[in-house]
Length: 414
Ligand SMILES: *Cc1c(COP(=O)(O)O)cnc(C)c1O
Image 1 (cartoon, rainbow, N blue to C red):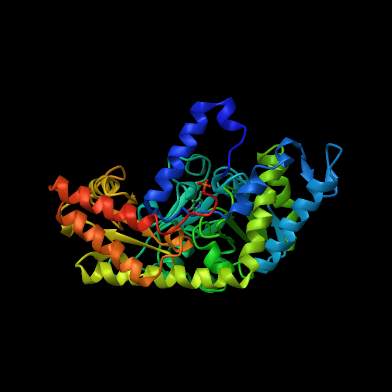
Image 2: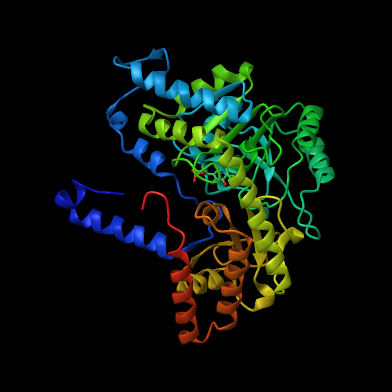
């Protein structure tokens, strides 16, 4: 970005931003939840829409002067509806966790039973973790992945649902690399009279592009972040059947939130416009090709990939047979300029702060233009760093190679 005023007014913040730009340019981003937005999305976020209060919804606001905020928000809603074939969309949630809070608030009472995926099997904090509001307010019970295959065992899901009779079933994960059988989830929920809630925070962009199956026509309600594979500003949205529209809108405002962030909603609209273009379909295809290549390369190099591969943009790799923990692998790869996040593996013998696995994702490097042959190099560097982990000079050499390589792939907006 070209900063005109900030360097004159605030050197401290300007310097930190410039250093972060360099860090992003020189480093290899494999954190599965991250991506790079376009310069147009960045520009929408820095607009004067930031200055406007617009509590309420288009056509029904609590303050005057809403001609243009109404236009912006209506465009965002219309584009999101087209992307996901949604009957109703609320684009105001500030992020994924607040969106999920609003969904629970709309459908449940405190103490109600909810069935979700176990956290160390790939679920999210907001799906019932005891330290999160969701685990404190609602009675979460859990299904698991099959330890042998790494896949969700749908027969077990049904068994647990019949036994527990939850009021809601949550499907959608932070660290699950496989297609999800939405229709089967819906059938099970119908059998026990539960609401169906899909949290597609991670694969939303791949779903919007038509590369993975879409829960929106099947489920009662769907939430997603807008900043992961959807490649928009940090934020979220909720989609639902028309019959739940009032409850969802009321749960977001005035239930959970005050004034919406219209500059972010404008950036969501711009990103959705990009998501609708044919180039984004190409992008989503390449993300998956890159992930499949990465998983195959890891398997070739003797790593254990949970579920044996991937259908989406991410994978979890068990580091145990390489003689280091997920946390050690994260720190080691950081040394060579490769960012990853440690991750639990199903039935992890180690605690969540020091789990056995690492999660890798290809959404960000694909935005930079990396293809299958580049991914092969990336895995070779990861393998090399793990082999050379006691050899500082070899690690330095890998770091230089990674940096030089990354600088060939510019980041939008820098
Ligand atoms: C990332 C994520 C969220 C939370 O998003 P934030 O914007 O970080 O609050 C919610 N659910 C799932 C499944 C996620 O992966």
